Length: 212
Image (cartoon, rainbow, N blue to C red; front, side, top):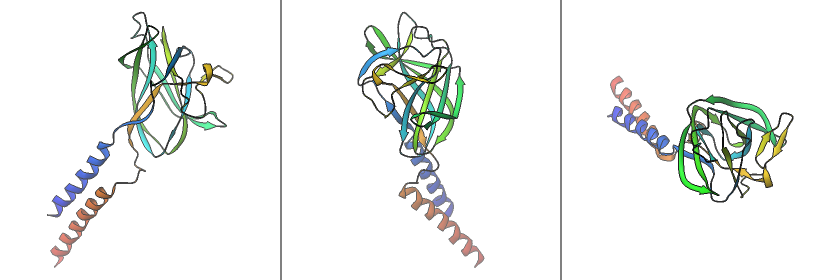
């Protein structure tokens, strides 16, 4: 009996964890303003804030693409940095991904297709707090980061210029999203705790019965 209880507890805990996998943070396409093309030569940065611990496993950025250049994104460099005096601080996580998935959203702006470019990264954990994400595509011919009118966070999107950072046109942010699941530091849900406790109690009862 105790094995069934323990199995139910573990299955429930796994179900709760998997049920939350998906979108963690998004700056969407509700208010597209224009495109900007520092994407090929320099890192572009934007800040975001998380309200809890999350394990990030996918990064998607939206960009303008035209003239049959949907595939011209090359490989992509990415960084997660701390925030230092309102600017990108030290690198916390980084990598380079050669396989970039594309998805034409079916939307367009001024004759340009709005395309999502996604990279799967080795899962990494971020605690609650504010960070900068940095992205650079190494072959982004006629591919421009999609800029949105609404300012989502305090700091506008930035471009590394060798000696510092330059703000985007009009103080805008760029469109991107982060996907993954709650981190191990997240508090388990009451149902999972109750079932796990029930399973452990069953084990204790079974051992006590055997000793008798």
